[in-house]
Structures are given as C-alpha cells and as structure tokens.
Image (cartoon, rainbow, N blue to C red; front, side, top):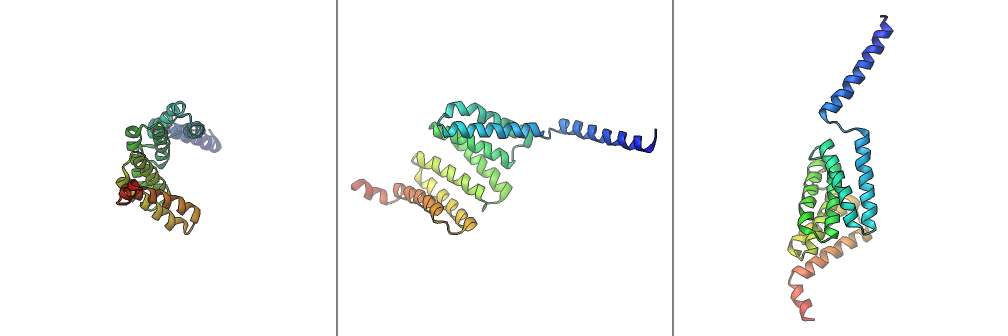
Length: 185
C-alpha cells in the first residue's frame, strides 16, 4: 500500500473511532439536539395556544433527551425545564412546577453566574409561581433581584423595567402592610 492509501485508511479509521467513541460516551448527535429543539418549538406553539396538557409529553421528552445527551447541568436543559414548569404553572400544578423552576435557576446560576439575564428570567418565573400561590413574601425578593439584573444588563429600558416593577409592586401590595389598607377600602 502506498503512502496516500495509508493516509486515507488512517483518516477513515480516525473517523470511525471518533464516531464509535461518541456513541459509547453518549455525546449528543446533531439529530438528538435537533429533536430536542424541535420538541421545544412544538411546546412553545402549544403553550401559546393554551394547550398545556397536549404540550406536556413533548416537554417531558425534550427534558429527557437533553438530560441524557447533555447531562444534568447544561443550560439547554434549564430551558427545557423552564418550558415544562411553565406548562405546569399554566395548569395550576404549582407543586410540579416549583422544583423545575428552582432546578433551572440553579443550573443557570452555575453555568452563567448570578447576574446573567437567563438567571433573571428564572427568578421571574419562580416569583410568578409564588405570586400565583399567594406566597408574596417569597415572590418579592425574586422580582426585585430579577429587576436589578435586568437593569444592570440592559440599562434603562422603561417598558421592561416598568413591567417588572409593576410585578414587584403588586407583590409588595399583597404582602406588606399595604394589604391591610387595601382590604379596608
């Protein structure tokens, strides 16, 4: 065999060994990444249509794929966990949503640091869950922290800040001494 043949054979062997190692090591394939992304897109479509129950199996499958292929601490997994939790929240299944929102926040804080916009999103989601349950004292600091992260990262953006400030203010009114005054009105 000539040297060009040996180089071609060596290259083919390297490609085969790499593919084999990827399969053995569980490295996610392009198809698996695409499948999870397609599932997340389907979940978002169904969520926007208010079809939470229909979307849950797709969200659960996306979480399973991402956890299996990317591991338990990957930021893409946090996104899929957030989607599944949002579906549960939409159904009023707070006990199912809370640990998923908490896990997504934890993954994002470890992956990106505590001042990242993705962390702010997770904080807002968890705060909305607490707010929906009447757990205003727990929601308030999360809303405030989310707002602070967004202001630091994005600068003055009145429309976004206003929305989060309104959420924080609503939580304050429901939880603080203002609540007694509102009840008296």
